[in-house]
Length: 571
Image 1 (cartoon, helix red, strand yellow):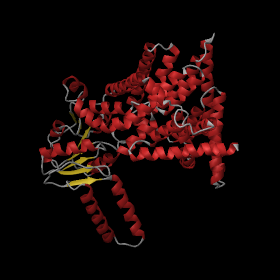
Image 2 (cartoon, rainbow, N blue to C red; image 1 turned 180 degrees about the horizontal axis):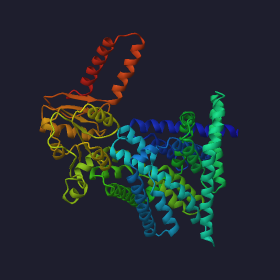
Image 3 (cartoon, rainbow, N blue to C red; image 1 turned 180 degrees about the vertical axis):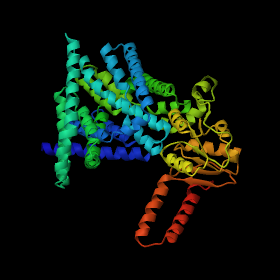
Image 4 (cartoon, rainbow, N blue to C red; image 1 turned 60 degrees about the vertical axis):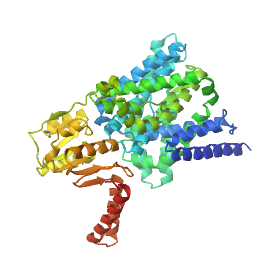
């Protein structure tokens, strides 16, 4: 029965994805990588378990539409505003420079200009899913380099809109390219205008009426209808299905129903999106990699090095230090989800050949595999490279400390390293109580903000002993380390204690972080956000059961003592 064949194919895909995702999780890699490898194994170039790949491809199209819709609904516009300058200028610079390198690479390999240019556009995009997941797992989403990466990724995602409008014009020569370009831009403008009108007027009205029925089934059905309807409309305008779903998500993101829409779509998205990643793996030919090992290695090296250099250079030109620029570049070395969509579109429009398409898929898988390992080893790699004379000046650039607004020598003050969401509240309270404080931060735009407010601050790396020596730690009351970067916390702690062994230190750390031996005659308090949140939840819950505040505090103190001894025996 044909229905049984479809069910069997889906069972094979989901089963392989489960095994691949679990294996990737066990070795601490993104589950997306497991899905890609699973596709390779069960695909036509592997075991050949699927009989109806067309059905899987159709479901994958639906899955990627849902994926892009949820990306649009959950689009972090606020984070883009926080790093607007480096995100826009750096993102545009990185995209343009990478396109030039990709085009030059294709030309050197003997490809036609349109094929080489298309290849440059494809490799210019990085993977939002991979980078955000890796940063989240490492607890670095709120770090300086994490925020910059997120901003550049957003700019890259937005750049897909003009790419998908313009690149189809490369498919077939036209006698009137200018008129075709004008028509394509007009279609895109009409579509965006229609989406803005429908998204701000009609769609919220419809969703509100459906929400009042209090029927979860109708609410979910309405959401799916909006996704598919918008995706179909973009296809009629000559654009991508996924692009339409992404724009629909962007428009709905400002709606008061955005959270509920996202909650309803997420389970379906996760199931169908994995079909997309498995389908990409199914199209990857391991034999091609083996037979063209030198070519694949060359292309991967060009992608990794160029994106690393350009992303780092863009961040450095925006005023950030060498370490932040270095770590930002490392995180953006891969090819992303939209690259797969562009590559597929290029193949369908005969802009690129089957060989180039296969080369893109193989390079994408390898760069995705390298990303988590590169981000994990990037702090150690940075410390190794910065001691080399040729690279020392480059990697240490812009780290010279600048003391701004510091009124003479401070006494009994708090030295706060890192001015993020956590420390903003602390500094505000300290200033309200007229307690002296000094901020150390590496973000030049944060330093400008503090200078305008008249807050004593130092632009520099808190892990640098010389920077700490300018903070009057000999007379400080407490050192507060709020940066989410564990290596910076450990290094700064050791350097500070060499200056003042009796210094009281409060340090932020991720759950499970292990610091080296730290000897101090003062007080060392390690605060782990996840653990403290659990204690607060327990505190409120026990209050509901009638326990008194002293009883609860006794339990909290006991749990904190046991946890600290188990997690940080050397602290």
